[in-house]
Length: 113
Length: 210
Image (cartoon, rainbow over all chains, first blue to last red; front, top):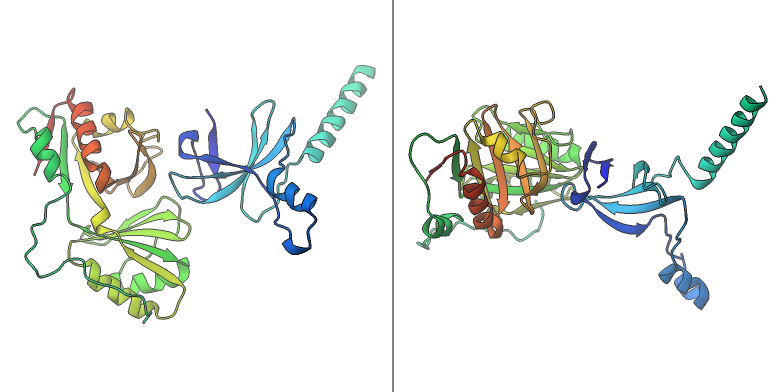
């Protein structure tokens, strides 16, 4: 079970109160008429399925009934952060990989020392 | 004044009206007696209004009309001096106002007049939900085994109200005072919740006040 922090309620709540709503930050093409079939198909049907950091949309269905975003690690199931709609994540796959590289470098340095 | 169509749901015509739990009392009974540790009381036929809109605009209107300021903090519940009228935060742009029965339509009209052309919505949901009051020393114990939310006083002080899952039904749980808890349940779930309360409370002894 997840224990999810709702950024609108300002509290951690049980997973039972929430519903996952799929990938976050999907932007509808500004001019659908000008899209190629491939672009439109990618927008409509294709979703990321990363191994690692993933941004998802959740709704606090029993509670404030607001949508918000969750950054979740798909391997460890860790929820790294939650943030309101319209905001940008502070933790991304890139920031995490930099973090890991930095950690690896410092580990090596420690071994050398 | 907005041009929304409004009407008073309480008419002068003599229509037989039953509280939402009347059916449950007939079918499941209403235990009475002494030696109980849990007391149930339905406070039926109250006026329930849902206010939606910007906090600043609504706060001003509610302050002038009702004399209570709109709770801006999440999960907050405020009462007026008499304790009969309350406003609860439901979501960043949504509040639940509960007033004595019959007051909701005049209140709605006054709020609409006050809010004018502002961007807001007021819905009268009095017929859709009912309020059940729990008291007695076992009230918190019963909630502990029924709801998924932490009802320990350190997490649930007086003046808090949350929308959560009560025995699989969506319910608003409120704590207006030290010894009382309130459940705002959907009318269609009222019988289910009542029977759940009787069953769950049987180990403590239940007294139903009608």
